[in-house]
Image 1 (cartoon, one colour):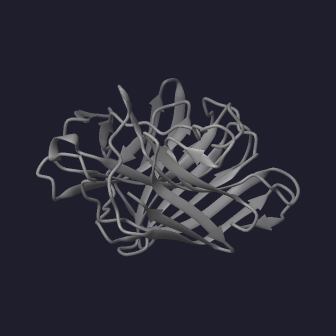
Image 2 (spheres, one colour; image 1 turned 120 degrees about the vertical axis):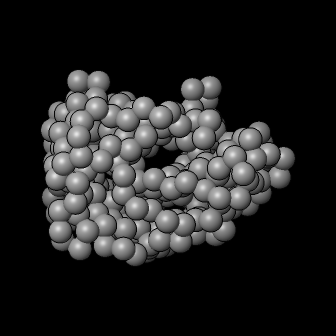
Length: 271
């Protein structure tokens, strides 16, 4: 894969792994059906996730598709959950196998309107150079630090759930569960590189960023987030009702549209 380095994070496989990246410490655990498994660092991907990149005043973006709830019922957003299916991705019109398009699915806090931090986790998929098979990863990120991957089984069609909790302005937990095989991975952040605001809660499909800007955005069948709920610091809850629906627009063309109702967020590929 042209965007994947063969370099791995330093450290041996162990039941709980402490990783330091750019001066920030992460504690990672890995289980399957409640039994601890070794934590094995994954490949260092030349991928990055960014806050929502707005286009004018409309609910459109160059990199996001989905829903962002900035209407807290009281207090700051501190927890978000949601579930999705790892999509079968393919080439869009005009793309070639060498483009290796990709897509990420995630839940997170503070990607829309905060500007000083974003805590998120989910899965990402990249089409391999044969143009038909794909590689899937579980990933975690506290922006502005780069995303991290660890070896967790993620297959196309698997049911995934994400749970992100901000326990403070720069601390929290990110959990990615593979509901299809019982695997789960949790990253604890004890001294995050940014400052969270608790301003927004998001359920997003994203066009990731590489060294030269936005990566080719893969085609995918219609998908959805289910069980979408978020909780505030005052114990109140919200879902996709009243949230902002975001469409991804590239080169003047809408490639993906998002809409939410209740605990479901619909994601539709449109080009």
